[in-house]
Image 1 (cartoon, rainbow, N blue to C red):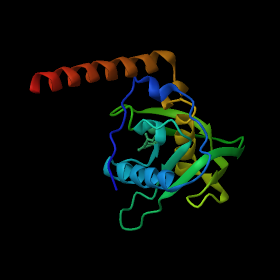
Image 2 (image 1 turned 45 degrees about the horizontal axis):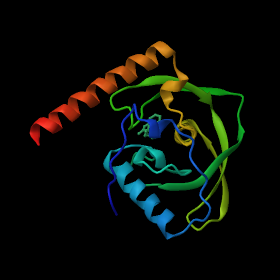
Image 3 (image 1 turned 90 degrees about the horizontal axis):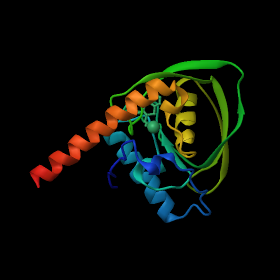
Image 4 (image 1 turned 180 degrees about the vertical axis):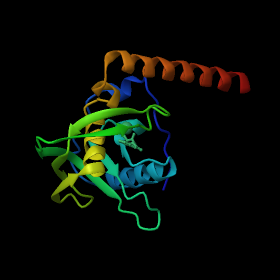
Length: 177
Ligand code: GNR
Ligand code: NI
């Protein structure tokens, strides 16, 4: 299994809606396994395909935070079929916005329909951290980042800082080459 490079914002690939997967084949399964390896290596609680440059509706999640008892989930074409009126605030981060965090308010519980790695349609109901992560990952499939849920001022501060860091990193890579 491979560890894939994670795209850092700002990047147009993180702002595009992704295409549905037509068939859950070996290529899709290999990508999902690589996404899980990449997520555990980072480490992160979830990862969406566009974060590794693949504009397909695929996400992986594991909120167990316990390497001895992992609960990896791989979801193809996930959709929210129900969400609670009750809301939940959580301090969110994103592997594509490293070292930046902000509170985001979302529905506290969601019911998600998806295809598993065998192509079978499944549904799960999630609350708390799992609900947060599923919604955060599914946002990525619409080209939406957690900073799109906070004020424009805070969003621009974070995105400008990231752009500056990216420029410094590429300048350093050029100098070192
Ligand atoms: O690792 C991650 N942690 C996290 C914390 C709070 C809310 C959402 C997340 S998901 C994030 C990994 C990521 O960027 N997934 O797209
Ligand atoms: Ni993210």
